[in-house]
Amino acid sequence: MSRTLRVIDTTGPASEPAPGETPLRIAIATNDMAYLGAHFGSAKTFAVYDVWKTGHRFVAAHAFDNVTKQKGKHDDQDDKITPKVEALKGCALLFALAIGGPSAAKIVRAGIHPIKRKDPEPIEEVLEQVKVMLNGTPPPFLRKILGTEDKPDFMDEYETEETV
Image (cartoon, rainbow, N blue to C red; front, side, top):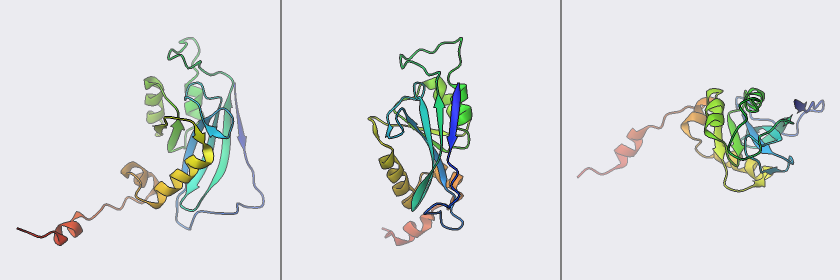
């Protein structure tokens, strides 16, 4: 069984993306809504946020009762992965401590890029790291998602090099 909690804010968020800026929707595997601290299959909850250069907003929490036991083996009788993938559709990134090959393949097919983290860390730190990345030079696949796919002009660098 799964449940989804969405926040409905009638007062409006304190911060909004700049006009024309597309927020990046991310999911974080968690068991306590405070830390990125779960493997994909065993995560009881996925916290979903919209993140932009200057802020972020909590969007939803998807909770699951039927999770794997982190043993590296899945019960073929009961698909515990597909409902999670379905719930995360629309997210661009998924942060988790680990994700198995078959689960990663399903996530990637859904258009979500999985990012494995070595150790648990506060969700707020993950959100700050995403903001720093958005303010720097995001990887090409993210620039495409964000609609900022400006290709670098390598001729600028070439013209400044000295010819021998």
